[in-house]
Amino acid sequence: MERLGGGNIVQPSLSTRDALDKYYIVTQKYSEVPEIILRCISRDETALDVAQSSLHVSTNLAILVTIREVSNFCNIEIIYKKL
Image (cartoon, rainbow, N blue to C red; front, side, top):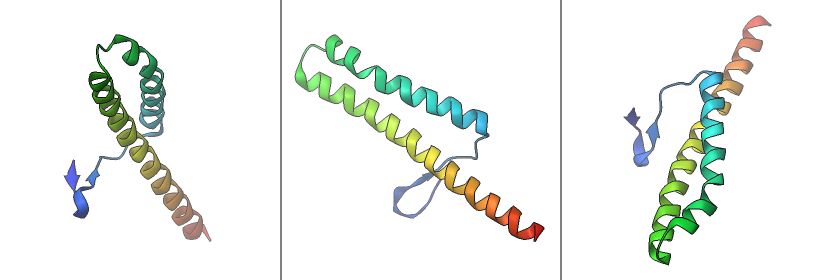
């Protein structure tokens, strides 16, 4: 991984299969939130646990968005090179 300006972290490129695997992980993490709430003792503990899960999910979503944008850009480049 490398850092770009503004503290953004650039992940290595993922294949479509890897991107789908990440998507399934994200949806699984969101489904865990109710379990986290029931498992925690205090509100503060719950808030911290949910925030950590949310950060992980947000990171994976950002990766998926970047993959989609790069894929769209590559498709456009391929189409224009064929013309």
